[in-house]
Length: 362
Image (cartoon, rainbow, N blue to C red):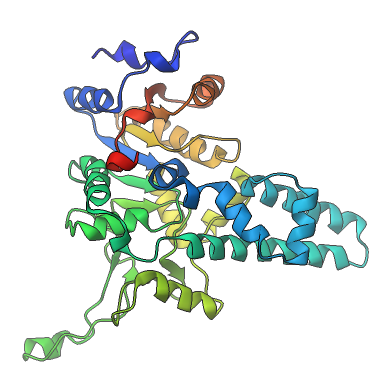
């Protein structure tokens, strides 16, 4: 299929769009590196009832917390990014007009409560363990990512859930690396034939081989202040149960829950794991394919990183040349047409419905 088939033209309609497989075939023919960016649409394709904003909103609303109830009655939306953004604005206004600072503190409390409630909601709604994913879904799910990690590409996710992690673990592939590893604590004793003793699973030692990046954090990754740790299945206890146990001790996973792109970027820069992932994303080369990511008004930091990648190494030719954005609907397509000029690389589109990421579930 010719490159023109992917072009974003004013009269282009959803029915005209090429398939996901056509994108892969074209990039293979062009011998170009390709990377993947997934957003919440990837998780919703697995189960819309669990991973949609509506499901999360309904769960939090059922908590009947008086502060959150007041907040939801004022901010009439189920978009958590918008709620966070407006909360931030309320706090700035309160700092000016609330001389006693009572309202400022109450709003800050609401902000923290909403953040923790959002994490709680995702955790409670989430499938309990890896084997609740069917064999078919796990197989198709892995094939989707395999196309990238087996061919020198990288996978970037903005999702908080365990689906990507589970799919990679379920297939026991050795080609992926999320940067985590265990350090051998007794190398001299091991040489003498004693049993090896390892520390907790920490990030850093394998970051130079990393090809899986969680741009906004994810449920199993925790920042202890000293190390970035990954919670795992251990002592015959499911991973999600171990995560819940940590959360019961007021330990929360690394999550970017800020409102707009600027605030998200501040959160990213304050955490060394997130900062590393973001910087790596800003330096990808070749082409980027997105699936389930809508490039909304709160995603400016993602577009900024893409533009940095598009300009870096310009003289040597080592840069990001193009992005292929998956769209599900006419509204999605029109949105990408409106924001095309925000990208510094070539923008192409494809029909996301043709990417069979979960088998018959999709």
